[in-house]
Image 1: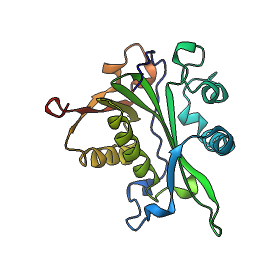
Image 2: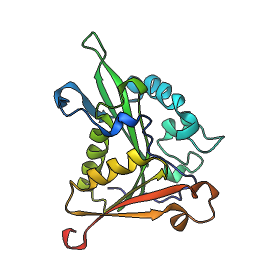
Image 3: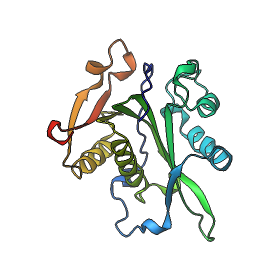
Image 4: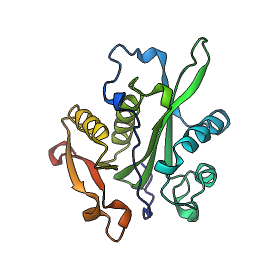
Length: 210
C-alpha cells in the first residue's frame, strides 16, 4: 500500500441509524449485491444524495466540502500531498421491482500511512438498513486493507451508539489474527472537545501473525 502521511483534523464516525441494523438478514444472498470501488461517473450523484441525507452526523466540520473530498479523494482537500489517500467502496443492489442496480451504501477509508487505515465514513440508505449491507461493507474493507499490508484499522463511534459497538465486536471476533482494543477517544485524540462522548475501536494484527 502506498505510504501517504497526513494528520486527521476531525472526528469521524461509522454511522448506523436503525436499531434493526444489528439484526442483519441471515438469508441475504451475496449474488444480489456487489461491492466495487467508487466510480465518479456512475456513483457521484447517488453518493452525494446519501451523504447529504446524513450530513449533520457524518460531517463534523461545518465548512467541509464533500465535492472537494470526492474531487481529490482526500479528507484534507487543502493538502495536495494527501490527494488520493481516500478509498471509497460502494455497495450496489437491485432497485425494487427491476433488475437495475443502485447505490445502497458506501464506506470510506482514509490511509494514514502504509500500515494504518481509518474507517472514516459509512452510511446506508434509510430504507435499506437492517439488510446486512453495513456488515458486508465493513468485512470487505477489513479484508481489503489487510491484503494491502495494513496492520491497524480504527474508527470511532459515539458511546450511545450501542448497536454499532455490538456489530464491531461481532465482526472483530471473526478475525483471529486481529486483536480489538476499545479506548476513550479523548485519550487518543487530545485537544478535541468533539470526542468526549466517543470511543475508538482499533483492530491490530497480532504480533505473531505479521
